[in-house]
Amino acid sequence: MPQSSFVMFEEEYREITAAVEKLLREANAKCVYLVDKDGQLISSSGETQDIDATSLASLTAGNIAATGGLAKLIGEKEFSILFHEGERDNLHISVVGQRVILVVIFDKRSSLGLVRLRVKKASEELGRSIQKLLDRMAADADKENLLKEITDDDIERLFH
Amino acid sequence: MDGLFPHLKMSFINYSSREINCKIVYYGPGLCGKTTNLQFIYRKTRPEAKGKMITLATETERTLFFDFLPLSLGDIKGFKTRFHLYTVPGQIFYDASRKLILKGVDGIVFVADSQVERMDANIESFDNMKINLEEQGYSLSDIPYVVQYNKRDLPNAVPVAELKKVLNINGVPDFEAVASDGAGVFETLKAVVKLVLIELKKGA
Image (cartoon, rainbow over all chains, first blue to last red; front, side):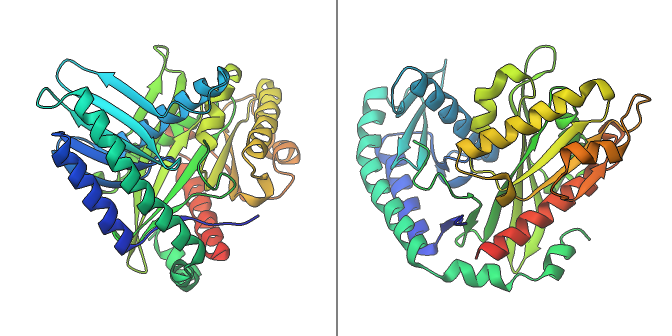
């Protein structure tokens, strides 16, 4: 069985973060998060200091996974957009390129229509970056170097 | 909908933030002590090394969807290692949720309930784990996993040799535990973390 990891490189990280920041501005959002479908945070931007990003990432992935299960049950492939409306803040969650999840938190300074529009545009851009990343992961040997260099002693030392 | 590489283990290596992220799932029958393991790890970990523990449970404290605990374990070659610990809901009828949580798993702790009347439940849960892994394109033999025999302090505990015979035929690392007072909890965690990192290294 092939074994691999989701690997993020500097160049794609910059591209992705730039796209996330642009979305934040253009959608008038409070904050934007990009999360891997397995619940790992990839990038974030905006008023993120009061929000536990690790929890947000894990719960978002759980949410998308549960909704995906519901979709399958009724014969849909996936629900690609989720919207949660709060008293002050709202949550717009969408799946990008089948692999990552885009979370936009916004309040009355923005609107669902604007967020949807900007998310759609940003998704195309992010989708391209993610695809580039996946291609590079398939081709690049960088990660192998790092992992091969790990010694048993390194692993042992983690626990002391 | 399962991502582009649903058959791959999905540890996440970030060269930009210099982090290695791995996902470990605690599996086992209802009330075997999966959540108790995580609670003990949470209590005994330095504040700077842990994130918030999330528990999605019913009002009677039965796990509904999952528990989640992010842990940092120090650096390897300049990379921060982060482990995301999850538990699955143990009760039989939550199977759909268990499948979701297994997605992208890098390592598993199978927690067995040592009590004699829970033997059938242990076996059923172990078989269920194998089936759910196979559905995701994994095979148990490819996944780093360890076994924990929990509740060793109870008078009706089955001898470990008996438990081994049915729950550890592959001879993976296994541990006796009393998760409620922490015995064996960190030994189990360390063992699975080691296996995950060794596997990651092998796979490279």
